[in-house]
Amino acid sequence: MVFYSTFESSYLWLPLIGFVIGLLATMIGGGGGFFFPPALMLFFQVPAHVAVSTSLAATLPICFIGALGHYRHGNLHLNTGLIFAIAGIMGAIAGASVTGLLDPEQLRSGFGIYSILLALLIMYNNRKKEREAKAEKSSSFFLRLFNKVPAGSFYGFVGGMISGTFGTSGTAPVLAGLFAVKLPIKLVAGTSLMILFINTLSALTGHLFLGNINMTLVLFLTSGSLLGAIFGPLLTRRINFAKKEGALRDSFAYVILAFGILMILT
Image 1 (cartoon, rainbow, N blue to C red):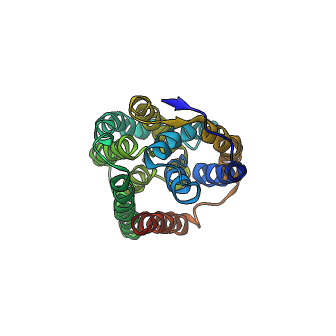
Image 2 (cartoon, rainbow, N blue to C red):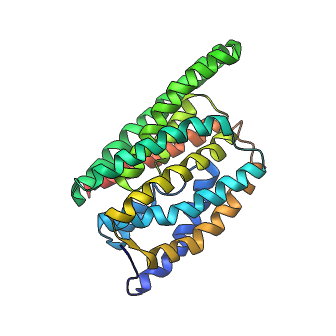
């Protein structure tokens, strides 16, 4: 069900929050869907099921504009994105069927648990990347493709499952998967946004029948997040990610870890 809530003065913070999330999310390859639900639940006391459905609606335009911007600047690997996205659609459909079985507390706790696990996985893959760099360079194209398909299918399915279940864009598992297949971080940003757009669209379709979408919150959030999504790809193009790749991955993992702990404890 789509509805409009009564305006509250605290909503004036939403465009700023949306801008920061849209900017940072499109720079690192996220759609912002990971950050919207906890922000709405923790800071604006939005009910869990409304928060996750509203988050999907607010995330969709960020993913689209961010992916389009990265595509124009050559920061998107289409073949890898399709592998993840196909599995993600199936995961989103499966996850949407699970949402109706969860109460608000289970949604919060489940969100926290998966966040912590994925943060640890990203950190592990980051440490592993440098050790395997030489082996990756010497491997053949067909070997890399063989390794990419099962990894992409697994992480893509998990990302879609998370989208369908918790109403997020599934950023964490998608990024973890792209890092695992050793895609350069400038390609990770655009490719993940393409995957997240497809995942979010699939999950939103399911949540239109299961959840409540507060369009007042969506409009306030997207008024800022769309502007941030436009500037994100531009900044990505100007920054030398080669020297900052490891630090950016660790920073993202720490943010995921902090949100996961907070969602469980509060």
